[in-house]
Length: 269
Image (cartoon, rainbow, N blue to C red; front, side, top):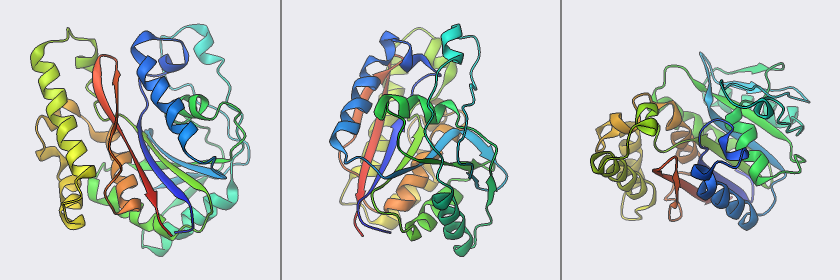
């Protein structure tokens, strides 16, 4: 891993709502803006979004990726959002090589654009759209250990001032988002968030134990309530696999009336 690599897991909110002034996303918008202001401006961004699954890890390799408006039922302006950042084929090739050298078969996609798990947070964090970006898919097996291995493979990247973002959501139960907010739902949400924060930040944990907790995340309190399907958590496993160390203290926001966590690691060379 080269110098000055930041690794960041973010909770990216609901569809395009963070860009539409939705009051239930104000804290998220504030947190992402603050984070971007505190980090050095990256030379390139590699982002793993919950909204792309493939049978093999797949990497955007086009020079000018478009956008995929992969949401439904929002106002017309939601489908006119622009984020014309360049791609970075050289970084895409490095990602592919790192995965292949680790024994993980991977492939390129030179046509796919960026989904909303990419362009929504990046438009908040880096609105000038002047940083080259590459997106890496999840693997559709949704196997946590595989995603840790993908992260470990990415340690071989040799890119100065790289920002790696896992774009998911630490709580992702769609029914609960729209249900009345009860003390029971709040308690379940908080119990899982507390477990996740302890898992990612506790310096007393051996890294082998931290990895085991993230592999068997579904044993955590109310894990399957908070994540009926794990695709929004798995970008975190990639981030930790890359970082291999405790994160800084969690960055917490209330999003859609639920507590959600974000985690930052600064990875030494």
